[in-house]
Length: 449
Image 1 (cartoon, one colour):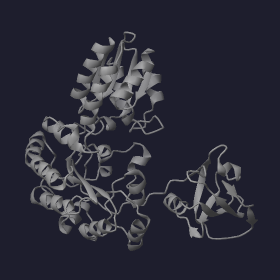
Image 2 (cartoon, helix red, strand yellow):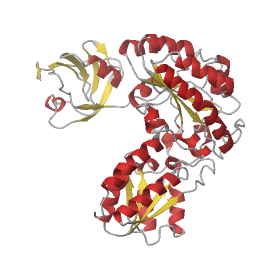
Image 3 (cartoon, helix red, strand yellow):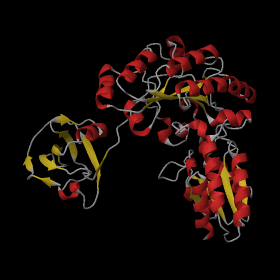
């Protein structure tokens, strides 16, 4: 890296650019005396609106950076970066655009008061879809945003389609002014944008012939529309004044899989790759065996709850093969109700290999009701209740999967903290990655293996 001397001058200009929030020690940015609070205004004359612009415009070896220092001075820095060199700064995350839809099945509308504040944010931002894999409807996308997506190749995007028929989609989104989604997806596909799509299935609204049309329409855009996941709507007991929706029952899930798995297999054969996937929750509700892991391809929607259990089962075998004897003790393990049978099987095998006794504790969700059984939505207050009732008695440690907590903060969905658990239960609390390897590593830590 080399750079020319700084040009520093006083100036007043409209507030723009993106703010530096951290500078890596001994980085190029540190050498240039950049600091948190400085704002990057432009690169090679291109105004910088967000971290996407930074990534797009900073690809050249020769860069002219325009910055506003904390005191208001404007600096210009000319850089010559070698391939692979990084400036060494962290920028602010884009403030998400708010969602203008009123989806009948919106989970946020079904949240009680008193949860983590961030849970009440309804975002509808294509930038967060590109950066973090957030699903967005694209229902309020402006023409200039479409142009930017195509020009900067913001791919892949994650799109909540729900239905390709305009009237059905408008009814589901509660937005009569949303443009036809199929036309937009076709335009993006023709520009080389890759997309992963989802349908939140609402029995009686977008299933049956509506779902078949949606599947066919999206499959016609393969490979640019690379995958379609069908996930069941989530209903909590907090649906006061909201439309009455039919749940996905055990019987419905079983019939659904029997009917639609045929089409999924046919499309995989026709397209040469898996395309149509069903959320793990369908198989759990129906009490049906999962397809083999190979049927999930490269797991394009595992973060959407598609293929998580098959992946867990595959990895569990590898962990059991390498597990070794440990110091004998009793370890309590917390889980949601849905994955209980699969985790129980894994722990039985792990107990035989390690000599450790496990007490698997499925937490019944009192916050959202009986219909919500996934681990990630279990509140800390329910874990405390289990502990107060003696559910963790005689255990050397309690293992908590990280999906129950806000990343990096140790806070459950209801604002109960790990510190609260330790203070009340007076026990060793160990957080593990929600994978067989993550659990085995945590077990070694808590038992000193």
